Length: 62
Image (cartoon, rainbow, N blue to C red):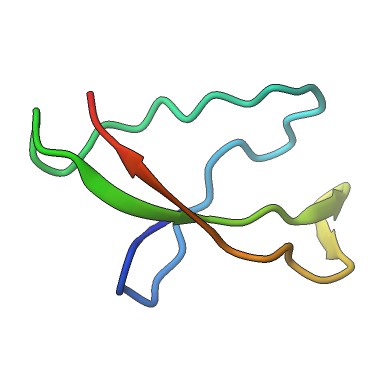
């Protein structure tokens, strides 16, 4: 996950082996919606396998 327009990815949901996954991270400013970019990565143990998914954008708020 990263804020739209930034370059640094924040890893969330590491080693989740069930769906649906719920992002419980809070917005940077409480009550102010923000656009987040998300992608999925395949993991085998501690190693990334394959290529990241396409990036999707979502509006996030608390």
